[in-house]
Length: 510
Image (tube, rainbow, N blue to C red; front, side, top):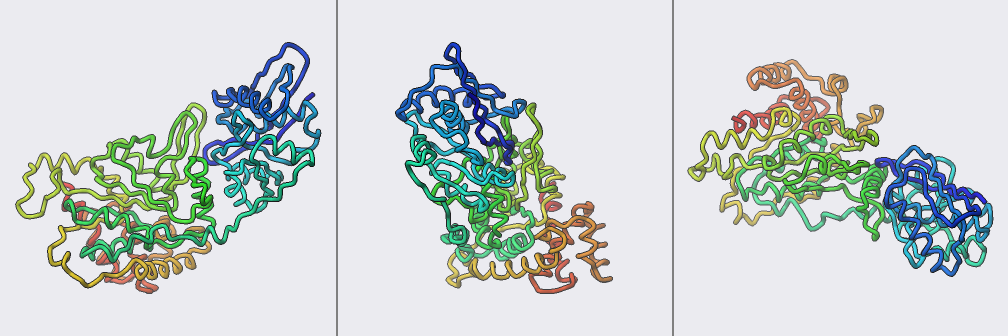
């Protein structure tokens, strides 16, 4: 007898439908799985056999053939355990023949028949709902995540035995629902961090305000202990809150990566990723035989913080160039080419020299060669993609003893949010949300300059030897400075402020 169960598999951060076809026939007992299964899928045979036996049933002594269609795409993971078991039970006649029509089944089986959670439930359920399959059986630990897809009816299962009881009419379970509004409203992840804790460094704080308001990349250069890391960790506290659409995008990525917390299935705050400088290029961009999201995709709609920037491998830093421009990263492997979203704000920090004290009196004893070698680890093309460069001098004793509290994150965030609203309204027909996302044609439309402003920028372009990309970035940051001031036009003051953040690469990169 043949039975067909609906399931799903992952390809990148998206899902595609898989039909689990199960056939029971007479002959020597055998259990074969075909359809390009990986090792984890092949091992389903032992998990399913033992789970059925420990659920109080007799495993059939027949020839069992399982096909995972489409058969020309590699399948991986343990998510097919439940649909394979359900297909066998349906073919045996234990489950009613049409009981699972219109259902999607996903889940890993333990040997005792209980269900374990799997990665990537959100894209699987979403794809199924888009295809018209709106009823889903999922492990109870995945139920909150699956219920984020409001078009689907999600039923949470504890075990294989419970599914049999439900489909046989012996037990009733109601549709699993979650309070999405309450989950999304909790955006206090960074409440313990505040800009008011940072003494001095007003120039750097202003640069961070610009970066947050316009989605711009930023580099901080200064000696050890000047507050670079401290400021970077507080940067998320002034970012605009996530929209629900952005939250779902991030949740989808974290679901596939297996990084969602069971206590809250919705990513309700902007991610802040700070990988160690020993990270490889593959771990940064994503990779593997079947590629999985890397750090730059995990930072999507959030922040990627690279501390001690010159200590990163040169190859790892250079792979950032395309994602910083396009907001996506494309990974090619033998099994296919996948594109992951990676629209993040890059916040980087570095010392000016190997010892860290260049420009701080007589403390630096690095040779010119050592300084040049250290700074040359950051390539010109990568520096050209950074919008704001700010120098952070050592904090003085007077600053540390100053009892006057600086501006809090909430006050700065109010200005950032107001500027962001201006941008959302301005670009409502463009499909973008931040000034940093403007392309060349949009810059001409939304960043016009008056005669005096053009003369200033022409002079700066020549004297600072700017590239075309730097020219566009200056205009985008100036547009953000004008938005923070509530000004419809970019003025001399806005341009002058922004130009100071483009001079440090000439000062330090010798």
